[in-house]
Length: 239
Image 1 (tube, one colour):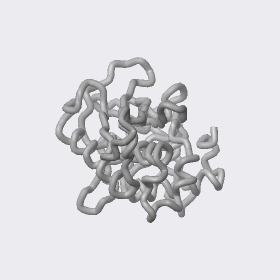
Image 2: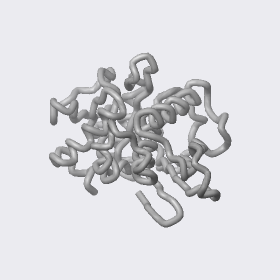
Image 3: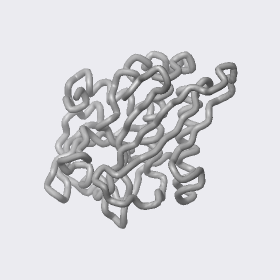
Image 4: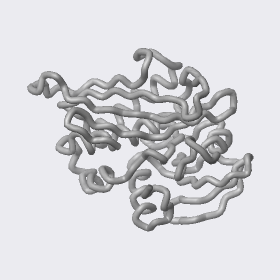
């Protein structure tokens, strides 16, 4: 996270699927003050480099849901515009984004960005989480979860084993934990760390361990991250 006079930045970790091979990505979301400080209309969001029509229909829909969820639940900036982009963590060429699995990563990052850039816009019913959301880092927290518009909850994604295997590797892609949808099928053995917060440790097909947290929705994910951080269950979050 970087906060300067001209802009606010939130970094996060995501993962794409490249023909059933996980491709971790570093995401950057930047809120820049509008040139006209009297303009109080909702800020714009440019979600990805290359234009607003990059990716398939499911990916585009997941971006719309991430924005709508953030605006409805958290609030939306009126004095800033937002731009987002991502890069591969290991230098490999990234695929054109497809599918809905980046919803969770975009949504949590946008919610934190609103909390940092325009806390006055945060809605009353979630204001009790404002301090925690502003403090908790997402740099090494991955989210791989789609969205179910009927329930307003996270939804399971495909190729999760390949994605977790890539995130569990040491190096620039290594993450403190990965948040998935509650009930996400995963074909790995697990060891419970914190049952109350849906937190367990899994050994991937590549023999590396990764911590996985199941969450019902983005708000539940934030609450669990705060509890895990305070309880030092996952100390990497504090780095």
